[in-house]
Amino acid sequence: MPLRAGILVPSPPTTTPQAPTTVPVTRDPVVGAMRATWADPQGAVVELTGPHEAHGWFTRPEVAGWGAAPVTLVTDPLPRGGVSVRHQRREPRRLTWPLHVYGDTHLQFLDRYRRLMRHFTLTKYRGAGTLTIYRPDGSDRARAIDCLYEDGFGGEPGENVRYANPTLTLFCPDGYFRAVDRQFIRRTYQGTGGSPYLRPYLTVSSSRTLGESTVFNGGDIEVYPSWTITGPAAQLVATNETTGESFTLTHNLLAGQTATITITADRALIRGHNGENLSGKLNFPGAVLWALLPGTNDVNFQVTGSGPGTQVELSFYPLYETA
Image (cartoon, rainbow, N blue to C red; front, side):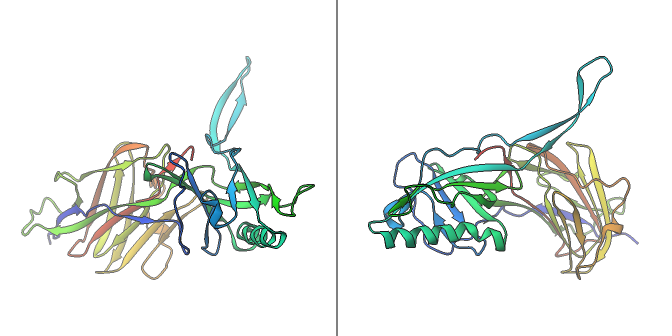
């Protein structure tokens, strides 16, 4: 019996702010200067730059460690000398963030110092916080990185009466900065009436009817998107034509049910509507949960068993070498 087919058409791209903001923040009044904020693990956001008169601390200019992400080259020695590079592994980074905290009186200084310290040392118990760097040309250039406090609030001789200059060391498990806004690419079902029997696939397409779509990764390195497939659907075939990689997920989804694919640094989680593990529904060993290369990626999605409400969504944060 012929399958009803249609075309997945792109919804308008949307973005969602990543960093939680629980208190009002103001922009650095210095024209051309960066603005930095710290979101602690409980979601409270504090300014690290200006206007310092409002909170009694500011960032000193000796920030370090926010250049290109570090890598380790894994090599093998060659018989006639030299080495061959087997692969490159990205590494975590450490940021040096110098601050100046002050007060008109000892008690005012102490209150500010303890309050600021608490926002950072919470990472010892509650997980990572988020450092976000804003540029004066708009939020499109803002970049964030997750950090754990490592050192800096130990105290220096001659300080901690009415001022202190803590130089923080922030450990960043992922060495890359990410965009503040998450990018969403959605393709939704659109019925075509009577479809020929020889075209049994629901096809994702932006402007053509051959199953092709373009996804742009504006970051510096490849990124693995998260996937949400909304039924009705029986099978998804997803191909990145730019890299030549593809995977097939075969799983029946009723209308409104979803399957998700989330790829982290150490694992891939494929879950069904009720949280069940769908790893066995991928076409291993040939399946490759592919990444989006920097720049334009030509991708092709095909869905069988489609109908009204079928949707394929990709989402990702572009990743950058520097802040």
